[in-house]
Image (cartoon, rainbow, N blue to C red):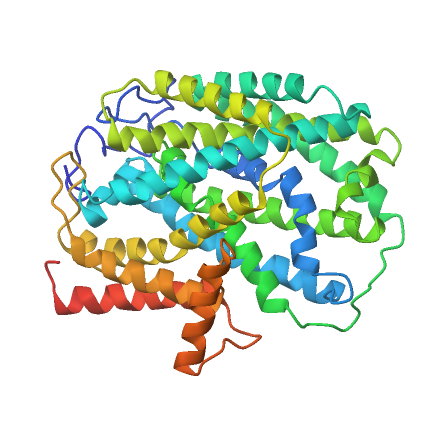
Length: 456
């Protein structure tokens, strides 16, 4: 099949057709039902844009004690980074809606089926890692609500069970998120915004903009982390337009709101990340509204577990997705029960994988909209031919990202890139953005390659 010639896996429903009450396909080559309208996708991405991780990650934006950004600079970084990152996310969502294929199966058209296995394996590792992390976050949030550091295993077990159930009926779960959860989350967010906004917010970094590009990059990375998952859901969009704008508007509004509220809570907690959530429980009836946000966090773990299964479908297209999601749900729950926190090295590993997908999106978008995807259409079937030349711009983009902002996975890895900077006599300046430059390098390289080798 190709993106240009509709087939069972890519046929869309006419825009004026009534919604079909069906669930996601059980195997890869079955036509996806197009049931998700603008409101469904807006609600899905709005829920994913608000997270307990987002509240605490406001510390990444603010900066280290003594070097904090001003409130104005931090706010600007949150807004600008979210808009840029979510625009990238919306492009990935649009491609999913147009092809009707899951995110990793879309890459068959870019690299060919066999070569698409490389990003697929990386995405499986990323999604499993984030799935475990989300269960740990839910457990930590639940312990804050009940005021105890015990019962970790019980909270993880309940969250893991809920996550797995949601993945069995993914389209029904997304509908439920729109009808019920999104409303409850909005009420909780409004309540905390009013309560925390009534108190003074100190500005420890008044006038400071040093570190602004790094903070913006961190926000872009959060949005882009959903890029290799977006098409898993937007393949069910009724129209590409609803997919793009539902994703962009829902995630943009929610993430900006989430990070700004986290920033306020962090400043009122005097920069103490460990006690940030106590700012929420410290207001009247705060525990009840925080409980809503803790329960809602299950949609994050749901997205990671379900997208792991969708990625595995690219490797094992005939395996029933319910077996895949069930097995992955059990796996991440079992691991999360055994540990209480992520090791720093694995967190850095996840960020390293994240830096892989910024340039990959650039290659994907340029080839789909300006290259072969536009001229000839993409082959997305099991026999899609390999296109190894397109690994080059992806590798160049990844190298550009690491050159400008090495991920500290090991001392040797960081030293390699630092030494390369010295050899080339170019040290990245304060206003250098790894995300934007790597995206630009990969995109331009892909465009140049498509011009030089029209049938690459």
